[in-house]
Length: 417
Ligand code: RNT
Ligand code: ZN
Image 1 (cartoon, helix red, strand yellow):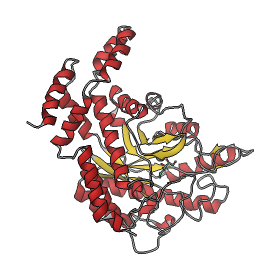
Image 2 (cartoon, protein in one colour):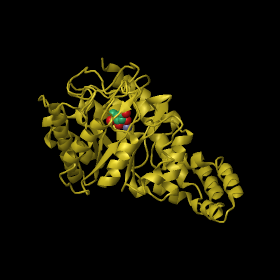
Image 3 (cartoon, rainbow, N blue to C red):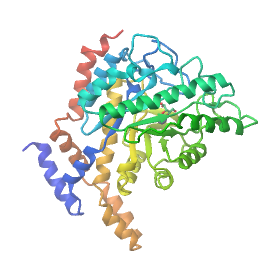
Image 4 (spheres, rainbow, N blue to C red):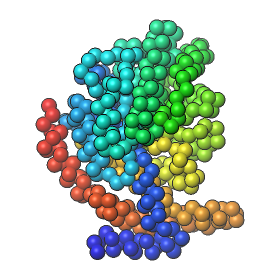
C-alpha cells in the first residue's frame, strides 16, 4: 500500500466519524465537468490575426515565453494540462479561435471553421463550450450590441447568431451540451446622460440573437454581466441588473464571473438567489485582485465558498463550472493546471462536508454547533483524500506535475520564439 493510500485509509475513518463517505465524495467530484478556458494558453490572442491587440477592457499582463501560436500548439498544451488533472473536463473556445487558412470575418464564421476542434474533442471524449468574441476587432469600438450605429450592431448580431449555430454543432457532434456564453465589453469611461438607450438597444439585439429556437440538448445560451472594465469604468451596458432581468424574463442562463462585482461582493452569495429565477448558471471561476485582474485561481475562501454552495444546494445539474483567467507572467501550462486543480480540489472538499448533519443542526436552531463544527471540519485531512484521488487516477501530485511542466517547457514551449 502506498503512503498516500495509507493516509487515505485513515482520512476515510476520520470523515466516516461525521457520516461522510469519502469514496462517494471522490466519485461525485470526479464526474462534474469543469470547463477549461482555451484563452489561458495564448493570452486571449486567438488565431485571426497573429499579434492583434487585445481590446474590450480586459488585459493579460506578462510576457512569459512560449505561448501557443497555432491551434495545434494550443491543443497540445491543453492535452498536457488535461494529463495533469483528475476528473471530467470540457474545453471552452472563443469564436476568435477558429482554425482555417482562409480569412473569415466574425459575421461569416461557420461550424466548418471549427471542425478540427470538434474532431479533437471527439477523440478526447470531452465536450466543448463556446463564446462569442466581440472584442479585439476593428468594429469592437466602445459599443457592439448596444451601439447606436446600426451597421455595427447588425454585424455583431450576425456574429452572435452564428456562434449559437456553432454551439449547436458542438453539442450535436460531441454528444455533450455546449454552453455558449455571451459577454460584451460595451460601456464608457464617463457616465452617459442617456443610460437607457444603449440598454434598450441591447435588449433588442439579444432578442434578435436568441429568436431562433435551438434544442437545449445541444446548445444553451448564457449572458455574462460585468460591473466595469478598463475604459468602461463608469457605465457598462450589460450590468448585473440588466442581465439578471434579461435572463430571468427570457428563461436563459446567466453567467456569474467572480471578478465582475464590487470587491466585497461575492458570487457564492448570489447563486441561491439567482437560481430561483434563471434555469441554470455558468460560473466563471476567476480571482480578482483589487479589480477584474483574472489572476490564477487559488484555494481561497471564495473558491471554497462557491463549491460549498454548489454541493450544499444539491444544484450540480444547474451550475456549469468554467474557468476564466489569463496570466502571462508565469508558465501558462502551470497557470492553467494550478487553477483547474484548485477548482476540482475545492469541489472535492465541498463533497467531504457532512451537509445533512449541518443542515439538521441548523434546522434545530443549534447555530452554536454549526459554527463549531464547520470550523473543526476545516482541519480534517481532506488533502489526503485529494492526494489519493489523484494517485488513483494516475495523475501526478504537486512536486511531480511541476516537473512535467518544466520538462514540457524545455522540450516544447521554450522553443516557440
Ligand atoms: C471579461 C469576461 C469574459 C472574458 C472571456 C475571455 O471580463 O470575464 O468572460 O474573460 O470571454
Ligand atoms: Zn468571464
